Amino acid sequence: MPVPRIIHPDARRVLHMPLRVGESPTWDDKTGDLWLVDILAPAVVCLKVDGTVLRFEMPALIGCLALCDSGRIAVALQTGVHLMHARTGALEFLCDPDEGRPDSRLNDGKVGPDGCLWVGTRDEALPPTGNGRLYRVRPDGAFSQVLDGLNTSNGLAWSGDGRTMFHSDSSQQFLQSFDFDPQTGEMGKARRLFDFTNAEGRPDGAATDIDGFYWSAGVLGGKLNRMSPEGEIVEVYQLPVDGPTMPCFGGPDLKTLYVTSLTRREGAIDEVGTVIAFEVDVAGVPVPRFPV
Image (cartoon, rainbow, N blue to C red; front, side):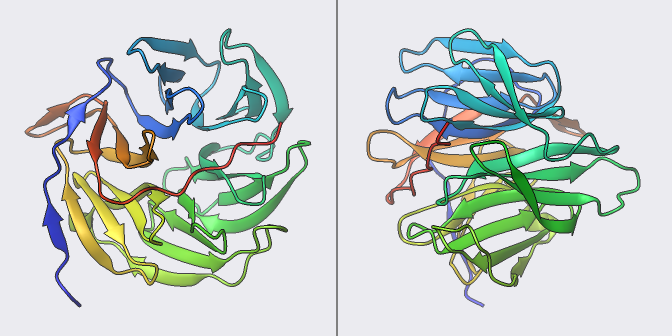
């Protein structure tokens, strides 16, 4: 296997507010704002284009968020999926696909090319029991289970043509892909693409670029791995944070990469979660809005 190219990006910190577990960065192409979550705070954070920061405290642990056509924000809480008013933070319940299961909470999610919100769960049992799932939530609140037997559903992203879905399990440390019908949301059989080691970083949140490559945050490894559609690591971005959790493409040309991170205090490592940004040479795949 070819040795991946190592890149040290000229990264800058763009959020001067500590995050416990920053996640789900989402670029708003209409306003230039960057939305994200702090899972354990729990809170929704918005970094406005003018540099001001909005923060909305949540009533339960939050896994991810997604922009909506109406201007609201879909938030995946431990109590279900809600629609949040973007100025007041008021919540409207949509559905609870996980139905209050013990030792489980909603985790990584993203709107797919089919217009549905795909959201997975994290197995909170100790030791893990493999109760993790992936759900597909329609705009009317109807939902279906599409995967199970996971520990930590993560890394959702789609190719630019919408015909390939990528998905990882952070705890079991593998990446898989599926043929995908962007009109119906139907998936083909899983293809196991890559099994990660701790040195490469556990596969956390992810994004895709218009050339078909998959960008996976190597949490606890301080890396962002750019991977081919076949699952080969072609570039490794060495980051100035040890715990990167998820990238997203933003900026007017979608060539600015924003990466959230988590607070980590272990041994010689003592850093708080934040958001960094740097420029790249390829544009990202735009993420659809939830049509509600």
